[in-house]
Length: 118
Image: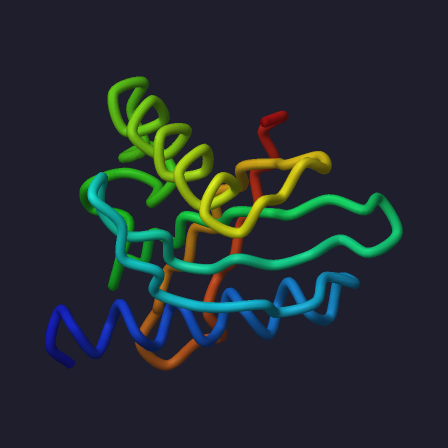
């Protein structure tokens, strides 16, 4: 499986996982001047937009996927969130989440979900 296929598989799994946990899909792969937002979901119970960074790995040899979201990456993601909210004129609550997906050959994918407050 190529890196691109791994990433696409991870995003699809993350989206299904989040939808099963009550979030509503809005858009995927939004390109901005600051980079890309993997998934934008909505928590309708909380009236909150949830911006999701999906990290997919084919194993844990390099650590858990969510460990790759450094402070620098978090800062960049906050810029993406601000850009997107301004673009769609969103004034409600926001949250930034990281979903880690580990694709284990011959086993079910392992999915972790870390929530950060916007």
